[in-house]
Length: 375
Image (cartoon, rainbow, N blue to C red):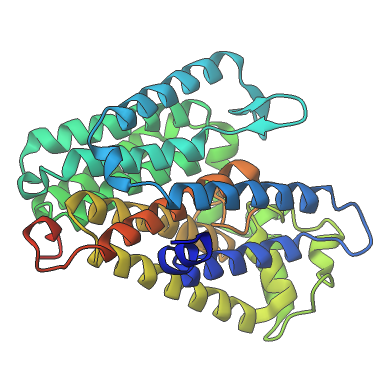
């Protein structure tokens, strides 16, 4: 088989096209037609690296991951990175220690940690999903999640900590955990959140108060979300046009390349553009569900669903924050937000999904070995 036939047969071009479309939406949103475009070109370089990684990961055998200690080693390495980061990490954004600054390049291990957690939970549950209601499995899997969760809170990076918790929580729900446990976790989470409130940083407390009363501090803690709402509203149905977002390019909307790129996109593309974005992500999600359904076995199926949760929690929370539905915290929009670390991890995830799809195509769903959690 020549290389052209290999790519034609083994690459899910629809999934890749949808991801590239969302990436293009983000890049064109923070592209300045009359200013400094260093971020655009850096993102373009990151995209090139991401595509190389995607095609490399797509060619591997995903079953290799569950038959050795690679995932466990990667998890321990991530914990090591967080430990070093706590001591040596460079401080950015309200003092959050989440980056290794290497001068010309800044590396953020947080997004890698989220994907490694998905891999670890998939490996842990693929033989134990029928025993999901045994408390020991919930405790052990919750312990894996909690270590990363605590490191992220310490940075502090509340947004990423929430993502890590939701990855674990929704994975056990999908695997069929008892409703009594779900109810207990929700109640426990509410109590824990209320208990943890006094220990939050002052700016985090102000964001919560602003969420409860958006008009209480429009020039302070409520400035970001107020400008985000103005940007979305000013776009109308059809937007102001590419490069014509006045809220964005006059610097009224803060962090429009990352935390508020949804609002910046809405200002330029309007409600119609937002609807198109939601439809693209919906098709993207159903594509991943199809891969999970046709997966060769439990490990592949659980892994695909975990990656879907990883993408979906980012998308829902980011858009919800920009719409004022959730308190403001730093969460990137999949593929759209500026940043090389998260973009590379997202395309690694796509590569894994493609490898799962490729593995599933080689086996009949009626084979015993090919049964998965949907059966």
